[in-house]
Length: 236
Ligand code: UDP
Image (cartoon, rainbow, N blue to C red; front, side, top):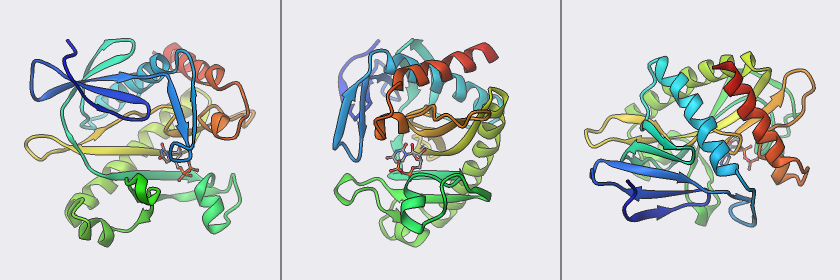
């Protein structure tokens, strides 16, 4: 059962539970882009993202990836291990898009083989800047050994996710994940994996089925999330 609101982010709320080592994560319908500059609400987005993320996490856990997820409580809420989030956005790119295109001029759609791994510092005040390992260590975010472990997990997770999305007719362009530390120091995958945090292109038509529809005012945002949810659900 949810108790006190511990933290409210852009798309989720974190509640305490009777167990001090466990929290409940509630998925809201809010959407933001451009570091909060653009805001909207999409009815049912929270439910869809919670379910999508849960299905993906279950698959990763079956493959031996350690995560914060314990179980879903209902369609919008998940019971999770309480972790200290490492203030890094871990980004994996298989196809050039988004900030990569803007920053270094790679053509959108160019295949990246091997994939590009990036870290951004989760700090709204600095607009989540791209950083390297030395910056992360100097900031005290993680040790070099931990960063190497995280990179290994990013590669494994990318391999599993690419295969999973391909099964449902989707090219995984790029995605952002986060990691947290459990009480005993173990680093686990935390936060969501959903169309809010991945770029997902239909393999046949190239249609964008992710948050870029909101960022780029393309319309059909919730319909795209519903489509993703339906394809994952039909798979199981
Ligand atoms: N991403 C995210 N949260 C962020 C920034 C990026 O989930 O705060 C995801 C984004 O959806 C994409 C990937 O990370 O799948 C790479 O994003 P990019 O660096 O291209 O940034 P953007 O163009 O989204 O600003």
